[in-house]
Length: 206
Ligand SMILES: [Zn+2]
Ligand SMILES: [Zn+2]
Image (cartoon, rainbow, N blue to C red; front, side):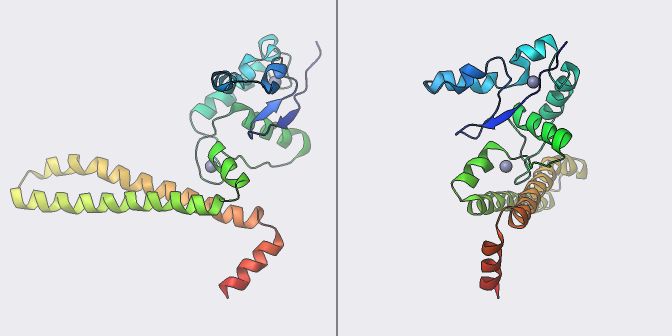
């Protein structure tokens, strides 16, 4: 049995496509309408590939299943914002490059990819980070209102704790998401901006 090696390209929509995929021709057909595009998004996974079905790909079937399971469980996160990676082949490409060439490709979600291309990643992610800050502040506000409400109406402490659980959850979740975006912005500044832009930025900060 010969093993098929995957090889990757990124199309103009930022999608990673495997050139060894048995449906490669249909993925790269430029004359697709909206519905065909949506369909292709769903087909862009190793699981629709003949080499997966025959189990003669470089990535064994069992491994692809595990990777896909991990992806569903959000174990693969965007390096720039912490979001789940939607496209399976983005992850397969990363793992292949790490395996074969020892290259550590950062995983980037579709939203951040679009923003990178439009050159507005920082702007957009600052905005996204602020949304989560507002959510956290909203949780604090709701929490304080609840305390007031419970003090005024002398409701049992037991109900109080049940009522604040979702608020606490919103608070922690928002801050976590915000932190991941801020870490992502630091990562971007360290690895994506070239040295000129960095020194320019330092100049401005002085
Ligand atoms: Zn494959
Ligand atoms: Zn992202």
